[in-house]
Each structure stands twice: as C-alpha cells, then as structure tokens.
Amino acid sequence: MEKNSKLSIITKGFFKENPVFVLVLGTCPTLATTTGVIGAVSMGLAATAVLICSNLVISLLRKLIPDKVRIPCYIVIIAGFVTIVQMLMHAFLPDLYELLGVYLALITVNCIILGRAEMFASKNSPVDSMLDGLGMGIGFTIALFLMATIREVFGAGAFAGIEIPFLKDHTISFLVQSPGGFLVFGLLIAIVTLIMNAQGKKAPELGCAGCPAAAVCNAASGKCPEKEEKKGEAENA
Image (tube, rainbow, N blue to C red; front, side, top):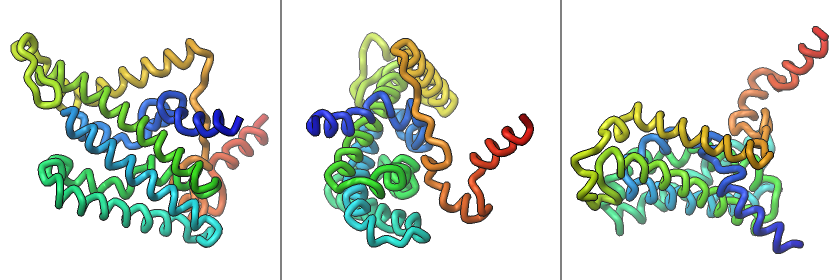
C-alpha cells in the first residue's frame, strides 16, 4: 500500500497533475525554451534538480520556518539551489549555460517550484517531498520535450539540432516563433483536457491554497478572495 502511495506521488506529475498542461504553471520557460529539444530538455533537468533539492530542504525545515515569512524563506532556499545549478553548468556545460541564458536564473521564481514548496513540501515528509519534486520535474521535462519536438521538427526541419532531410524544405517557420509557441501550447493543453475528460478525470481545483502568491495576497487584503466570492454568492442567493 505504501509502495503504491509512493509511486502515485511520483507519477501524478506525469499526466494527471502535469505542471504545464494541467496546472498551467511555468508558462514563460515553457514557451521560451521549446524552440529546440536540447534547450528544452536542459531546462527540464535543471528545474527537476532544483525541485528535488528545494523540496527536501523545505520539508526538513518546515517546522522551523515561521509561517509569516515562509514564502521569502522558500525563495531564498530555491535561489540557493538555482545558483548552484548555474555555477555547475557554467563550469562544465558552458554551451548549455549560454543557450538557456536568463531563463536559467528565472527558475528561482518558477511557479512550479514555489507552488510545490507551498502545497506539498511544507506539509509532507522529506522522502515524499523529494518524490513529488522528481515527479513534477519529470512531468515538466516531458511537456517541454513534447512541445520542443513538435516545434523543432515541423518548424525547423530538425531534431536536437540534427537536420531531417525530407523536412528541411517543407518547414513551417511560424512554429519556432512566439505565436507558434502559443499555438502548440494551446493545442496540447486541449488534447490533454480531451483525454482527461474521456477518462472521466478532472483537473485538480487548487483555489487560493494552491497559488504561490496566496500568502502575499491574503496578507495585503486581510481576506481570501475565493471565500469572499462564495460569501457574496450566498448573500445574493
């Protein structure tokens, strides 16, 4: 039973709660790094490493971090691991470091990582938190790989930088441009939604609790917008 539970923590990020196609998080790096398979996979693996490490540390410190400053603490922890990943890539993989550019540093504020810290790592054991980070990271990488494959193959007539002879003269250059990224992104979300509906599954409703900015929003307003909306509906009924 416990084995099945651990497995479900890992696999839920692959499809059921895929961070890109279901939860629609991390849109900026998804669109920016999927013009090529190499860049997309590199971003996915870098984010996965940060997810696993930050989830582990946040879970270990969850009882020590004061509730009022938990979001700044999470960001500091995540930024620390992003810096380590940056330094390692700069030292040993300079070409990939240059390829990812500013988007590597922006992993720090990636909603996927901050969201998992707030929703899962801050409430669960270190082992489960690491598994959650691994699953979400793999799901993120799968999404990036799928998008990049479609855009590079049909938009540039190549795969991972290797030219495909029978496609090189029949490319749709629109796909490797920004509008093409949005088009592919939207179509894949629609396909995933159709598959989930056909299987009778429903995307998780996260509400305020699932938003990484919920703490800031609630602190500023003194109330939860979601609860206020429901309260208003009840009063009007």
